[in-house]
Structure formats: structure tokens, C-alpha cells
Image (cartoon, rainbow, N blue to C red; front, side):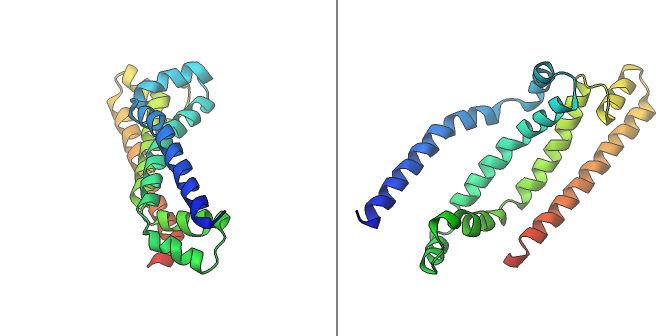
Amino acid sequence: RDNTSIENQKAIIDEYCRRALSGPVNIARVLPAFAMAPLFILWFGATSTASVVFIVFSVFFIVLVAELDSINAIDPQIVEYAKTLGTPKRKLLYRVLLPMSLTGMRGTVTFAGLVAWTSVLSAELNGLQDGLGFIVSDNIRFSNIADMFLGAICFCVLSFLTMKLLERVMDRITQWRS
């Protein structure tokens, strides 16, 4: 068999996988994540495990959809250049596609970090017995406005620091691009 027919078969399989996965991924993506927090606490108990799984759930689809879009936006000529230079197909993903797609992921990764903090707050407000969100929730219950405001400021500072850290990490990872 020639390479053209193999490439066509791979393209057909790739398109089939894309279509098969796009439905479930898009349905899960539009679920109201914060309404799901109590379910995660019911499923995993009021533990940090529930919080971590909920955070991953909240951020996963944001990153997945953006990464797929970023990979699809890569100029096909770049992939052809890599093939021409002898990059094996099995290394094409790690040496070309992922590094090139990361340049378009900076905003998404930063946004995902902020969503992660919002998810932490949501999980802790919905039944966890420790953490800053629990402290804020406790202060809401007792109408302690000053401490509630202090908790909100702490979340804002942590979110801002996370955003700046993720921006620096993405700048470092993609410094080859500038």
C-alpha cells in the first residue's frame, strides 16, 4: 500500500473520533459546573478528594476544547516541514503539535486557573469542613461581614497570584516562540 491511502485512512479515523467525541464533550462542557459541586461532595464525601475531582472536572473541558482548537489552528505547512525534516510520526505530537498549540493556550490556561479557584470556593461553600471557602461560609452563617470580606480578599489575592504564576509559566514554556 502506498502512503496516500494510509494517510486517507488515518484522516477518516481521525474525523470519526472527532465526531464521536464531540457530542459527549460538548454536553459535559455546558453542564453548570457549580451546580455540580454538591453532587461531587455526595459522590466522594466531604473530603479534599471531592474538591480536587470537582476542580479537575470544572477545568478539564475548558482546557480540552481550547487545546483541540489550538491544534486545529496550526498551519498544516509546519507539520509538513517537520515531516520533511524527518520527524517520526509518533513524535510529531510531542515535538510539533503540542509545543505549537501551547502558544495559543496562554489565555485559556490563565482562565482555567481562575476557574479552579472559583471551583475551590464552590466546593468549600457546599459542605467541606475546612478551607477558606468554609471559613467564608461560616462567616456568612453568623453574619460576620468583616471576616467574610477578608476571606473574599484572600480569594482575590490567591486568584491574582495564580494568574500571574500561570502567565509566567506559559511565557517560560513558550519563550522559544518570541
